[in-house]
Length: 386
Figure (spheres, rainbow, N blue to C red):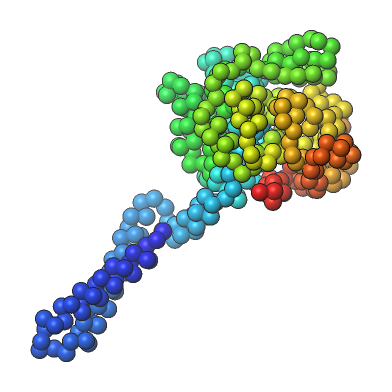
């Protein structure tokens, strides 16, 4: 907090003042009194500053916690600049790991979800999807209780099925009159270690063209239809992205895609034209984090290389690095997912070697009953690349 150095300077001033006044007391020995005055001034100064600081800081937090909080914040502010693209559970979990190492993370989130509470609010207010944005805001917040508060889901009345976080963002938008401005206000209010931005502040929908030529609009409908997807795109084509997103990409030390649903979270997060153009020009290394499991109706039978090819095809740029989980997954976990039609993403290093892509292999799964990425393991692996 830089208090001690200023106190030392002020104390030196008190000492010099005392020495300067000493000659005005000719009846007394000069140096002892000068030294006594200086020490007295120093004690009064330090004691006064300490009491003043405690008095001021007690209105904000426990004074004993301040040095640690300032230290953590200063250390994180020196962390690398990371821009992460995606949506859903995968991105928010990764953000929880990144925020322990840096306060310079920017999450650029897909806003095409049209199911559940988010879908109902889209229809009512004509807004982009807010659900994944809320999850990422909670993940980057500095307040430990905020995630539970924002995730609270009402179970009765007209608000049944809605989460507090979704309603919070919609309320901000109603007050601000502009979705982009509402997101910036949310970032400021929630005291984030970084920032969360939508891929576009426009209310766009996701459309998929399947291998048989059929086109389906809407995330829920795309998942329900199933089959091999040829490409996805946004309708209408967004014309606007937030300048803060473009600035973050330009200054990034590391660009990360995923983890998350390939066609309904990761790819939609970078589909707006200005974002794709910025990513194409960015000098920072681009990393793609492959999912642990396939998703029914979206990536059935996909290998890690299939995931990577789909990303490169839609982005127009190959990721230089691909992060792949290669450790065994317990049989009891596999059985649970097998019943849902989900299987481990198969990995073969040979096609990546042919493309000249670096693959980071390892155990990135979180211990427990689920097959999901461990925020700490993923964050450490990613930041080791910077």
